[in-house]
Image 1: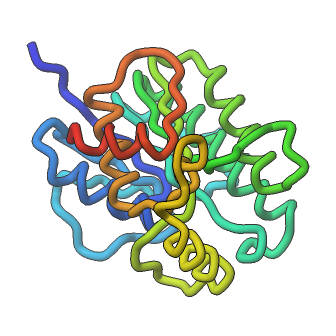
Image 2: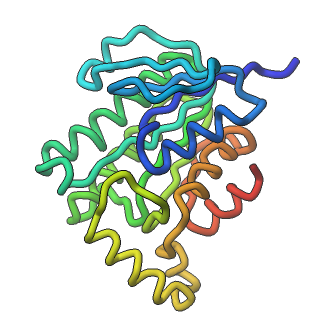
Amino acid sequence: MTEERIALVVGATGLIGGHCLRLLLDHPAYTRVVALVRRALPAQPDRLEQRIVDFDRLEAMAPLQVTDAFCALGTTIRKAGSQEAFRKVDYGYAKAAAELAVKSGARRLALVSSVGADPGSSNDYLRVKGELERAVEALPIEAVHVLRPSFLLGERSERRTGEAVGIAAARAVKFALVCGLRKYRPIEAETVAKAMVAAALHGEPGRHVHQFEDIVAMANRL
């Protein structure tokens, strides 16, 4: 008997999360998609169940019924306004969402992190991402797939000048980024989203970290 798949999406209004939501709603394997949002999204198919939530109170939410979870929640220190506010979103909210997914019966979790994530890093952004990875990988769940993209390509709702400069520079030297440097190549946000869905559908059990090459290969399986 084919397993009924129900997806939980966190970060559906973001660049990767928006693509992920669309892919899940279009994929025949998923009978229902639950999105945790701050405010209602524009008109969506009936298969989408929107849960308007207070992210400060995720721990108090009653369990949902899901099989796969996708977390693309994240901000930047500049947008958040402070290191503390950034950590609250990228670690606190994301960790609480992953714990809710486990409590809700999820067997597989795909998490967007960042190239260079390391809990021992002196860089605040990379340290928080690394700490989140470590916390999520310790959860009692069948499979965790951590995706570590570098600069993301795609149309954003807000302009990020510093990131745009970084993307332009990365594009300029893209073909010089070989061997161990390939993981720093810019990548389409839609490719990352495809890899997330493919990881849930086709990925192996256990804990897995996917860099540029793995992300592209996984996306091609969708």
